[in-house]
Amino acid sequence: MSRRTLIRGAAATAALGLSPARAQNATNWPDHTVRMIVPYPAGGSTDVLFRMVSDRFKEKLGQNFVVENKPGASGNIGIDMVAKSTPDGHMIGGATVGHFAINQFLIKNMPFDAETDLIAPSLTYELPNVAVVATQHVPAKTLQEFIAWAKARPNGISIGSPGPGTTPHLSGVLFAARTGVNAVHVPFRGAAQTIPAMLSGDVTFAVDNLASYISQIEAGSMRALAVTSAKRWPTLTDVPTMAEAGVKDFIVTSWGAYVLPAATPAAIVNKLSAVHKEIASDEALQKRFLAAGGRILSSTPDEAKAFAAKEVTMWRDVVRLSGLTPQ
Image: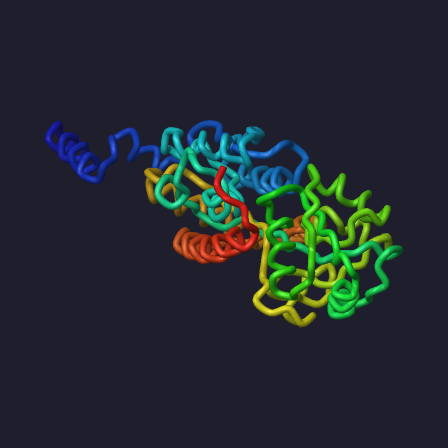
């Protein structure tokens, strides 16, 4: 290759906003260990599900994918690391609905803007919420029976959640608004504290992540009245959706998506999206996700962006209903 050809090649990559090294990385990615940043503690649903797919990336791409938990500030610390990282595809974030569509309405000084600072190669998973009551303390067998029972109580009901601004809390707000039930929010640190309070009769109701309640539902100590997914959930086919149970416009899921810095070359973004699509088609992995209470998803970057934009509109309105203001 002549010196003139080399110069022309370098000029072409520069015109695209890429250095020759960046252009090479876009073709050969990944060429060393990839860090998968999960912005929540180890052992939670987000951590478990992203670890499942991370293991498959090792097999498909021939490089180590190392999961690192970087919790704090409603998950913003870890995702901010990703947003400000070198855009070469070697640091990927495991972002959730909070980063895309909720935190911006609850936190005054967000360290990043999900729409402009990040790109999502693919949606990764969704987890439905489930409306549950303690079998021993609530006689209602259906959601409509529960609504009638709740409205007849002089002091209404209490709704437990893992804390203000979480999807279970906001789902409870939406439920009260849609049904006219008088409800008081009782925040806990997580489902591990909410569940005992419900089983003791101190808290009436929850609309919380299915993954946290499935064992109680299967054991019969909790009764599932409805799921918040668009369709019936594969592992709870006898439980109606909110719409089927008579509460319209109530599709709520906790979902996750890979994120990369917005300046990441399209070749890397598209390669990650394509490999995830292959992974998501694996029936064995689909079953593992369902066993963990979730469902594996895949999408194009454009589909992920459109989905996030729709979620922003919905959660903005629900946060307004909650009365929460940015802190």
